[in-house]
Image 1 (cartoon, each protein chain N blue to C red):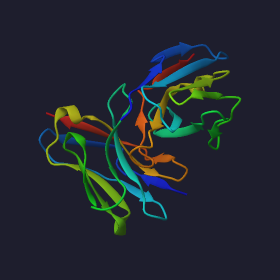
Image 2 (image 1 turned 90 degrees about the vertical axis):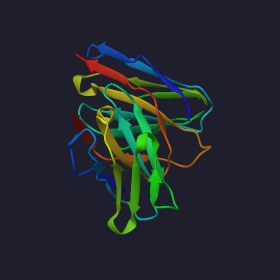
Image 3 (image 1 turned 60 degrees about the vertical axis):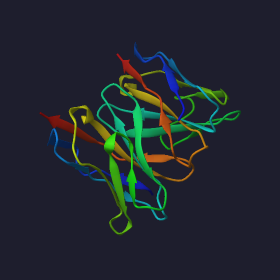
Image 4 (image 1 turned 120 degrees about the vertical axis):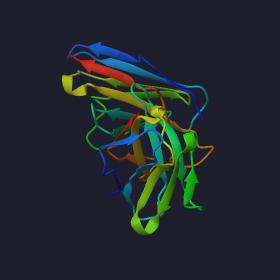
Length: 112
Length: 116
């Protein structure tokens, strides 16, 4: 069955520092991969997606993610974190039948 | 992307009662979904709301507990029936518009339910 692992429950970075959130997936075929962000009390916002082609994808708010098939990973990165990036981040994989399977989420804290 | 609204945004309910959550989209969409997010947890798919037919439920979710309606391509409701404190969660609807790519879903703001 398809699954998503986000190994880090919490991450704290200083404002202005770089960020990398890890995501590993389990899926037999070429995956459809997504990153979503959820601010406190809000719904989920789509940051970026990967379907095929260029393995480095750009998203909104200065985020990017790199698909590495050999490592079954789709890590999210940002070169310089802003305080407003503090939120929970979810990685998801398309799981057949138009369904998404989500990882457990990573809570990002930004310290000034 | 679609603009999705949910009503109510939050509610506090007594155990044994039922609550119906509405999801409205500003355009016609092919797929609508309902998710549950328990406190401190990730999202779990409850069901796919099918227009004109019965919803398709995921393992662990049943129609008697979570009846779903989808009368047209822009609207769906989820009812949480005979509630218990374990049903306290955020319930989110999402849509897949079908005009971009498969699996790309957009989410409503969620309904925060507390059962006392």
